[in-house]
Structure formats: structure tokens, C-alpha cells
Image (cartoon, rainbow, N blue to C red; front, top):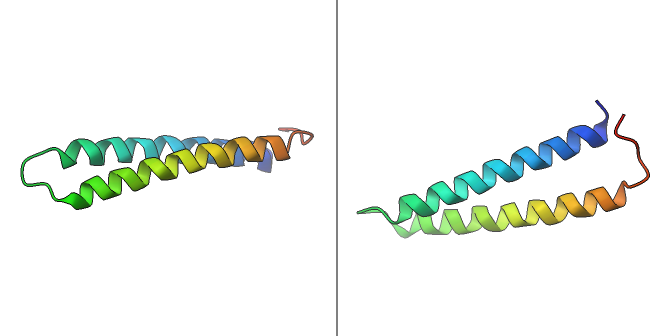
Length: 69
């Protein structure tokens, strides 16, 4: 596995984990007695997930000529 392929897999996994954590935090924030920290963490996690998607697209454009092998 090349460094490019590993990088793409790593960014995809990080995006999925960040999205899952953001959704979990936002769902937990709606419960009884939940503070605003879950709301803030969920929002920041979703912003980070969007940033990871933007970074992934940028990385793929930058390494267009590099093989996945």
C-alpha cells in the first residue's frame, strides 16, 4: 500500500469517526441535564469533519499524477 493510498484511507476513516462523534454529541446534548459542552463538541466535530472532506479533495487534486500502488 502506497503512502497516498494510506493517506486517503486515513482521511476517510477520520472523517467517518469525526462525523459519528459529532452526531453522538449532538444527540446526547438533547438529553435531560446535558450541558452545552456536548453541543459545542458536536458542532466542532462536524466542522472538523467538513474540514477533513475539504482537505481530502485538495489532497486528491494535488496528487492526481501519483499512483496508488
